[in-house]
Image (cartoon, rainbow, N blue to C red):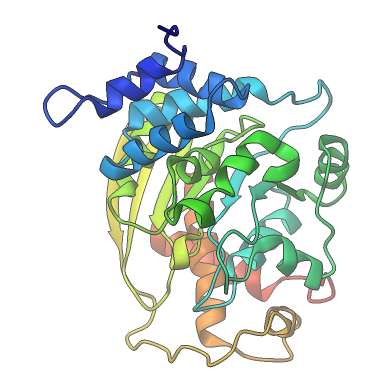
Length: 329
């Protein structure tokens, strides 16, 4: 009889049946993800493992353990690579343009060091951040050295997951093969590889608000904001109320932010990235887009300054927008 594979116990914990199975502890999740990152699992084990978790949704403890394992696997160079705000971008947009990118560039233009990470192309028909930045004339980083230079020069950088964690990128690319998102999508969003003190999170399914919030608390993130963003990105839909979940120094809270407009806007028939440029430069007016930019910016401003209200943050965001350097893009 052949000996049991070292990864088999993790699959067994998750798949022993309705009454005998259980979730992984944070320590077990760490060990399991460490083996996965080192490619010490068989493909059939990996598929079974990911889908067993997907079937009942990952727990905050599992997410925290997975994230810690990935963080420990990423070699951030010992140089002046620091960020004020971690911003993940893994969903892509299909109904509206990625207005949130203008929010991050406005933050950077006003001195906030924004580290953005994400991935592209795993779902057809979506506009992803890397291609949007390229269309805006903003180069993406492909190494930590480049990211460091960009943060120092412009206070903004985007590093794709394929460069940040090649193995995790391989795992997230399994979505077309499996037909479903996996826990890796949650893990990637939570990475915060530079350990920025402020973290913005966007999710699509409302049930994940609490998962991200509690995982952030377990990871001891100083300041975290999680919203159900448009399309799953970190973008406030100005036509709808927004549920905001936060963690500030281990204290978790939530509140309902009102819609910014009384009537919903008509979804555009087509999406043209050039519209972002035109609106930034002021050659085109877009009420929805401006509302998305300033509404998203307001959440980030509140995350970094807990003393201001939603109304005060919106006023500040609108002032920053009105005073933007229109020649920046």
